[in-house]
Image 1 (cartoon, rainbow, N blue to C red):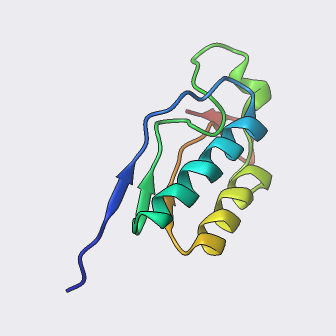
Image 2: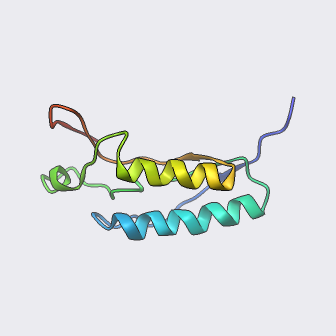
Length: 97
Protein backbone atom coordinates (compact mmCIF):
# COMPACT_ATOMS: atom_id res chain seq x y z
CA UNK A 1 0.00 0.00 0.00
CA UNK A 2 1.35 3.42 -0.98
CA UNK A 3 1.45 6.19 1.61
CA UNK A 4 -0.81 9.16 0.93
CA UNK A 5 0.51 12.63 1.67
CA UNK A 6 -2.25 15.18 2.31
CA UNK A 7 -1.91 18.96 2.30
CA UNK A 8 -4.48 20.97 4.26
CA UNK A 9 -4.84 24.65 3.45
CA UNK A 10 -6.38 27.41 5.52
CA UNK A 11 -6.73 30.57 3.48
CA UNK A 12 -9.17 33.40 2.87
CA UNK A 13 -11.84 32.95 0.22
CA UNK A 14 -13.41 36.35 -0.45
CA UNK A 15 -17.07 36.15 -1.41
CA UNK A 16 -17.71 36.35 -5.14
CA UNK A 17 -14.04 36.74 -6.08
CA UNK A 18 -13.94 33.40 -7.87
CA UNK A 19 -11.01 34.13 -10.22
CA UNK A 20 -8.90 35.29 -7.28
CA UNK A 21 -9.91 32.25 -5.24
CA UNK A 22 -8.99 29.88 -8.08
CA UNK A 23 -5.63 31.59 -8.55
CA UNK A 24 -4.89 31.27 -4.83
CA UNK A 25 -5.88 27.62 -5.05
CA UNK A 26 -3.55 27.16 -8.03
CA UNK A 27 -0.56 28.60 -6.12
CA UNK A 28 -1.23 26.40 -3.07
CA UNK A 29 -1.71 23.33 -5.24
CA UNK A 30 1.57 23.81 -7.07
CA UNK A 31 3.37 24.25 -3.75
CA UNK A 32 1.72 21.11 -2.35
CA UNK A 33 2.77 19.07 -5.38
CA UNK A 34 6.33 20.36 -5.06
CA UNK A 35 6.31 19.11 -1.47
CA UNK A 36 5.07 15.66 -2.45
CA UNK A 37 1.35 15.88 -1.67
CA UNK A 38 -1.08 13.50 -3.37
CA UNK A 39 -4.21 15.27 -2.16
CA UNK A 40 -4.92 18.87 -1.18
CA UNK A 41 -7.90 19.97 0.90
CA UNK A 42 -9.22 23.55 0.88
CA UNK A 43 -11.72 25.19 3.25
CA UNK A 44 -15.48 24.94 2.85
CA UNK A 45 -16.76 27.00 -0.11
CA UNK A 46 -13.24 28.09 -0.95
CA UNK A 47 -14.16 28.71 -4.59
CA UNK A 48 -17.17 30.98 -4.23
CA UNK A 49 -16.62 32.33 -0.75
CA UNK A 50 -18.97 31.56 2.11
CA UNK A 51 -22.15 33.30 3.08
CA UNK A 52 -25.69 32.32 3.97
CA UNK A 53 -27.06 35.64 2.69
CA UNK A 54 -29.13 36.03 -0.48
CA UNK A 55 -26.12 37.28 -2.45
CA UNK A 56 -24.97 33.66 -2.77
CA UNK A 57 -27.81 33.25 -5.32
CA UNK A 58 -25.81 35.32 -7.82
CA UNK A 59 -22.49 33.60 -7.08
CA UNK A 60 -23.47 29.91 -7.18
CA UNK A 61 -22.63 27.86 -10.28
CA UNK A 62 -23.68 24.48 -11.64
CA UNK A 63 -21.58 21.35 -11.26
CA UNK A 64 -20.26 20.49 -13.75
CA UNK A 65 -19.66 24.05 -14.85
CA UNK A 66 -16.94 26.61 -15.53
CA UNK A 67 -15.65 26.94 -11.98
CA UNK A 68 -15.64 23.22 -11.24
CA UNK A 69 -14.02 22.68 -14.62
CA UNK A 70 -11.13 24.96 -13.71
CA UNK A 71 -10.48 22.91 -10.58
CA UNK A 72 -10.68 19.64 -12.52
CA UNK A 73 -8.18 20.98 -15.06
CA UNK A 74 -5.84 22.11 -12.28
CA UNK A 75 -6.00 18.70 -10.59
CA UNK A 76 -5.33 16.88 -13.86
CA UNK A 77 -2.47 19.19 -14.86
CA UNK A 78 -0.75 18.85 -11.50
CA UNK A 79 -1.55 15.16 -10.95
CA UNK A 80 -3.16 15.72 -7.56
CA UNK A 81 -6.58 15.25 -6.00
CA UNK A 82 -8.16 18.60 -5.10
CA UNK A 83 -10.92 18.86 -2.51
CA UNK A 84 -12.65 22.23 -2.73
CA UNK A 85 -16.16 23.45 -2.10
CA UNK A 86 -18.46 25.95 -3.70
CA UNK A 87 -22.06 27.12 -3.73
CA UNK A 88 -23.86 24.98 -6.31
CA UNK A 89 -26.85 25.92 -8.43
CA UNK A 90 -28.87 22.88 -9.52
CA UNK A 91 -30.90 22.46 -12.73
CA UNK A 92 -34.01 23.91 -11.02
CA UNK A 93 -32.11 27.02 -9.91
CA UNK A 94 -31.90 26.02 -6.24
CA UNK A 95 -28.68 26.90 -4.45
CA UNK A 96 -26.90 24.41 -2.21
CA UNK A 97 -24.24 25.58 0.21
